[in-house]
Image 1 (cartoon, rainbow, N blue to C red):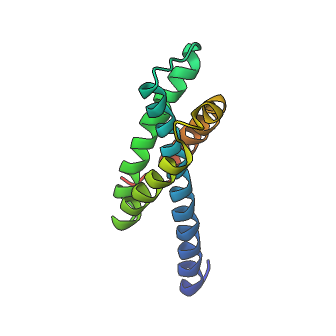
Image 2: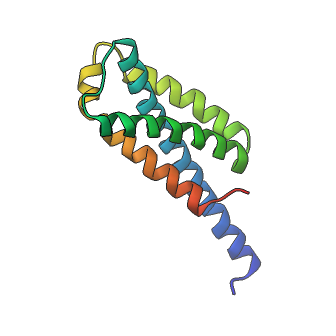
Length: 126
Protein backbone atom coordinates (compact mmCIF):
# COMPACT_ATOMS: atom_id res chain seq x y z
CA UNK A 1 0.00 0.00 0.00
CA UNK A 2 1.35 3.41 -0.95
CA UNK A 3 1.61 6.16 1.62
CA UNK A 4 -1.20 8.70 1.50
CA UNK A 5 0.91 11.45 -0.10
CA UNK A 6 2.02 9.20 -2.95
CA UNK A 7 -1.53 7.99 -3.57
CA UNK A 8 -2.84 11.56 -3.71
CA UNK A 9 -0.03 12.55 -6.09
CA UNK A 10 -0.74 9.53 -8.32
CA UNK A 11 -4.47 10.30 -8.41
CA UNK A 12 -3.76 13.96 -9.23
CA UNK A 13 -1.42 12.99 -12.07
CA UNK A 14 -3.93 10.54 -13.52
CA UNK A 15 -6.69 13.17 -13.25
CA UNK A 16 -4.56 15.66 -15.20
CA UNK A 17 -4.00 13.07 -17.93
CA UNK A 18 -7.73 12.28 -17.96
CA UNK A 19 -8.61 15.96 -18.33
CA UNK A 20 -6.17 16.42 -21.22
CA UNK A 21 -7.49 13.27 -22.89
CA UNK A 22 -11.08 14.47 -22.40
CA UNK A 23 -10.44 17.90 -23.94
CA UNK A 24 -8.55 16.35 -26.88
CA UNK A 25 -11.24 13.76 -27.50
CA UNK A 26 -13.98 16.35 -27.26
CA UNK A 27 -12.18 18.53 -29.83
CA UNK A 28 -11.97 15.57 -32.23
CA UNK A 29 -15.65 14.85 -31.60
CA UNK A 30 -16.63 18.43 -32.31
CA UNK A 31 -14.60 18.36 -35.55
CA UNK A 32 -16.46 15.19 -36.47
CA UNK A 33 -19.81 16.84 -35.71
CA UNK A 34 -18.79 19.91 -37.70
CA UNK A 35 -18.03 17.68 -40.69
CA UNK A 36 -21.53 16.24 -40.47
CA UNK A 37 -23.06 19.69 -40.12
CA UNK A 38 -21.23 21.21 -43.09
CA UNK A 39 -22.04 18.09 -45.12
CA UNK A 40 -25.75 18.50 -44.38
CA UNK A 41 -25.62 22.20 -45.28
CA UNK A 42 -24.00 21.40 -48.62
CA UNK A 43 -26.42 18.58 -49.36
CA UNK A 44 -23.76 15.88 -49.32
CA UNK A 45 -25.16 12.44 -48.66
CA UNK A 46 -23.22 9.34 -47.71
CA UNK A 47 -23.43 6.76 -50.45
CA UNK A 48 -22.26 4.12 -48.02
CA UNK A 49 -24.84 3.45 -45.33
CA UNK A 50 -22.20 2.23 -42.85
CA UNK A 51 -20.22 5.50 -43.05
CA UNK A 52 -23.42 7.49 -42.54
CA UNK A 53 -24.31 5.39 -39.52
CA UNK A 54 -20.81 5.81 -38.07
CA UNK A 55 -21.16 9.59 -38.45
CA UNK A 56 -24.51 9.55 -36.66
CA UNK A 57 -23.14 7.45 -33.81
CA UNK A 58 -20.10 9.76 -33.54
CA UNK A 59 -22.35 12.79 -33.18
CA UNK A 60 -24.27 11.02 -30.41
CA UNK A 61 -20.96 9.99 -28.80
CA UNK A 62 -19.87 13.65 -28.78
CA UNK A 63 -23.04 14.61 -26.93
CA UNK A 64 -22.47 11.83 -24.39
CA UNK A 65 -18.91 13.10 -23.86
CA UNK A 66 -20.31 16.51 -22.95
CA UNK A 67 -22.73 14.89 -20.49
CA UNK A 68 -19.94 12.76 -19.01
CA UNK A 69 -17.74 15.84 -18.58
CA UNK A 70 -20.38 17.73 -16.61
CA UNK A 71 -21.06 14.64 -14.47
CA UNK A 72 -17.44 13.73 -13.69
CA UNK A 73 -15.28 16.86 -14.02
CA UNK A 74 -15.55 20.37 -12.59
CA UNK A 75 -18.20 22.33 -14.53
CA UNK A 76 -15.76 24.83 -16.04
CA UNK A 77 -13.66 22.18 -17.79
CA UNK A 78 -16.38 20.73 -20.08
CA UNK A 79 -17.83 24.22 -20.63
CA UNK A 80 -14.48 25.60 -21.69
CA UNK A 81 -13.70 22.49 -23.72
CA UNK A 82 -16.95 22.82 -25.67
CA UNK A 83 -16.30 26.50 -26.43
CA UNK A 84 -12.67 25.89 -27.36
CA UNK A 85 -13.44 22.78 -29.40
CA UNK A 86 -16.23 24.53 -31.27
CA UNK A 87 -13.94 27.41 -32.20
CA UNK A 88 -11.22 25.00 -33.31
CA UNK A 89 -13.71 22.98 -35.38
CA UNK A 90 -15.04 26.16 -37.03
CA UNK A 91 -11.54 27.27 -37.99
CA UNK A 92 -10.42 23.84 -39.20
CA UNK A 93 -13.49 22.68 -41.15
CA UNK A 94 -14.71 25.36 -43.57
CA UNK A 95 -16.65 25.29 -46.81
CA UNK A 96 -13.41 25.79 -48.74
CA UNK A 97 -11.63 22.70 -47.38
CA UNK A 98 -14.67 20.54 -46.67
CA UNK A 99 -13.96 18.00 -49.41
CA UNK A 100 -10.44 17.37 -48.08
CA UNK A 101 -11.82 16.66 -44.61
CA UNK A 102 -14.80 14.73 -45.94
CA UNK A 103 -12.47 12.15 -47.50
CA UNK A 104 -11.12 11.22 -44.06
CA UNK A 105 -14.30 11.80 -42.04
CA UNK A 106 -14.59 8.18 -40.79
CA UNK A 107 -11.27 8.54 -38.94
CA UNK A 108 -12.36 11.26 -36.45
CA UNK A 109 -15.75 9.52 -36.23
CA UNK A 110 -14.18 6.25 -35.13
CA UNK A 111 -11.77 8.00 -32.75
CA UNK A 112 -14.73 9.74 -31.14
CA UNK A 113 -16.76 6.55 -30.82
CA UNK A 114 -13.97 4.41 -29.37
CA UNK A 115 -12.76 7.18 -27.05
CA UNK A 116 -16.27 7.84 -25.77
CA UNK A 117 -16.88 4.15 -25.09
CA UNK A 118 -13.52 3.93 -23.30
CA UNK A 119 -14.24 6.92 -21.07
CA UNK A 120 -17.76 5.75 -20.22
CA UNK A 121 -16.64 2.19 -19.42
CA UNK A 122 -13.47 2.93 -17.43
CA UNK A 123 -14.58 6.13 -15.70
CA UNK A 124 -18.23 5.53 -14.92
CA UNK A 125 -19.33 8.65 -12.99
CA UNK A 126 -22.48 7.30 -11.34
